[in-house]
Length: 91
Image (cartoon, rainbow, N blue to C red):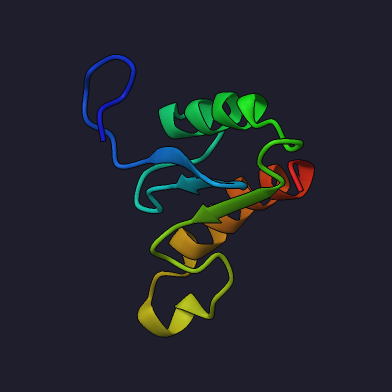
């Protein structure tokens, strides 16, 4: 999906009916200072919950998992630590 700057990113948002959908790229950083995190926070600030009471965030990796089986514990842990506070704050 094209970003406002014209470059290609693998995260985007869209509205369908009363739902606001956000698709994130779990292989890109969501840590403070990252481009995707800045985009997510600015996008969440635009959501009007009176018009779109449903806010749905999706990624291709689960936020909670036993990733140690796959040897990806640090990836799963970093994702949870970066994203969970934002999700709680934005209900």
